[in-house]
Image (cartoon, rainbow, N blue to C red; front, top):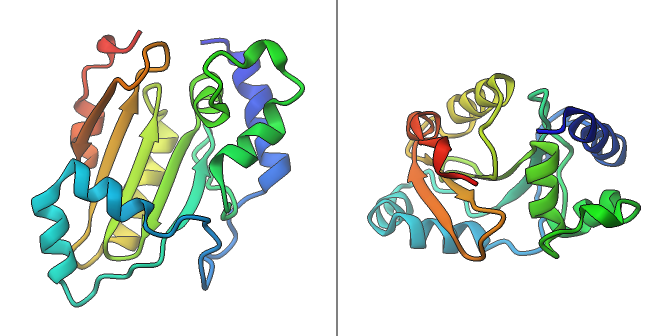
Length: 180
């Protein structure tokens, strides 16, 4: 990992999006049903049991988790916010997907949250200890009744290669040597 590039991307994204001060009242995420689609594809049985719960909230919020474990302000589109910081770094565009480049080179995590439903975590590299502690805090705070965290690890160099799982313990125990 190139730590200078990682720090540069984190500082640029922090400057662009800021930090989460208080959880927002309503979502501004562009596609509100994206978490339902992902949850249904990764864990269909869990999806049905969560939808049957009386505490299920269908509003979806999107955040970046920086490498230092801090949470960004709510964003409306991951690709738009990533494109803003990578537009000057033309040699960085390897995959034509700016959010994937930011996750890989910047070590950031893409997070979607639906209160008492699920937390979706997407990453390309092993989360730092600060990021794992933030995710654990989010799980305790936002999924107190019935929800579960789900995750996807993306292979950056190969198209459409993903590893999916349920729970933060499985994310921590994932065999990261599989990722190229």
